[in-house]
Length: 287
Ligand SMILES: Cc1cc2nc3c(=O)[nH]c(=O)nc-3n(C[C@H](O)[C@H](O)[C@H](O)COP(=O)(O)OP(=O)(O)OC[C@H]3O[C@@H](n4cnc5c(N)ncnc54)[C@H](O)[C@@H]3O)c2cc1C
Image (tube, rainbow, N blue to C red; front, side):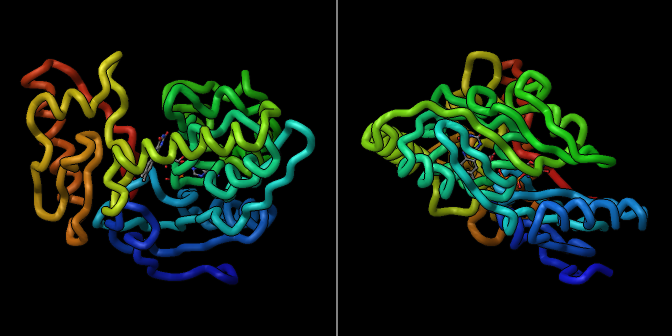
C-alpha cells in the first residue's frame, strides 16, 4: 500500500450529496507527479481507480467502491501571466475567481459559486449563465493512462457537460485559460451578480449535487419537473427541492438508493406525462 493511502474511507465525506458506502482505498496526492505515480501503482496492481475533485458532480453508491478514490484537492497552485491563467487541477473555482478579481481578468464570472475544482469543471465542461469552460480553455495538460501530454481547446471535444476527458477517462493535471482584461470592479460586480442569483435560486443550505438532469432540448429540466407539480416529492431522506426542481436535496438521512429511486421516479413521470427522456448530469459512481 502507498504512503498516505487510507483504507476503508467513508464516501459520504467525499461528495456534496453526502451519501455513499465505503471505498477500499482513498488518497490525496500532493503533486502532479505523485498523482501520476498513484495511477501507475493502481495499473500495476490491477486495481481500479476513480479521480475526484470536490465531489460536487458525483454521487457514490451505498455499495461503495472496491478500488482507489484519488482526490485532487491538494494539488492547487495558480499562477497568472498577463491574460493567461494557469491552474493545477485541484484549484477551487472559488479561489481561482478571487485571483481573477484581483488580477482584473474576465471570463469566468459565471462560475463564481460553483463549488467544484477546475479539473472537474474542464472534465464536465461546466457552464452557467451563458458561459462555459469551452470558451476560456486554451490548453490542458493531461495524463492519458500512459503518458503526459497537452491537448488544445479544439482537441478537447467539448460538448454540453461533456469533453474528451470524460469520454476517454483522461486525467486533467493542469489547465491554461485565456481571459480578458477588464476593470476590477467589472469582474467583481459580475461575480457578485451571478453569486446572488445562485443564492436565491438554489437550496444551498442542504446537501445537494447541483443540477441532477441535463437540459432537455430547449427546455430546462427544472421547468419540466416543476410543471408536473413534483417539487417537494420525497423518497426516504431524498427530496425534490421546493426552491429548484432540478435539485435533489439530502435532508441528512438519505441513502444513495433513496436518491436513485427519486431520479427513476422523476424520469418515469416526465416520460409518461411529457414524453421527454431526461438524462442525468450527475455521475453515479460505485460497485
Ligand atoms: C450547489 C451546486 C451548484 C452547481 N452549479 C453548477 C453550474 O452552475 N454549472 C455546472 O456546470 N455545474 C454545476 N455544479 C456541478 C459541479 O460543481 C461542477 O460540474 C464542477 O465543475 C465539478 O467539479 P468537482 O471538482 O466537484 O468534480 P467532481 O464532482 O469531483 O467530478 C466530476 C467529474 O469530473 C471528473 N474529474 C474531476 N477532476 C478531474 C481531473 N482532474 N481529471 C479528470 N477528471 C476529473 C470526475 O472523475 C467526475 O467524472 C454545481 C454543483 C453544486 C453542488
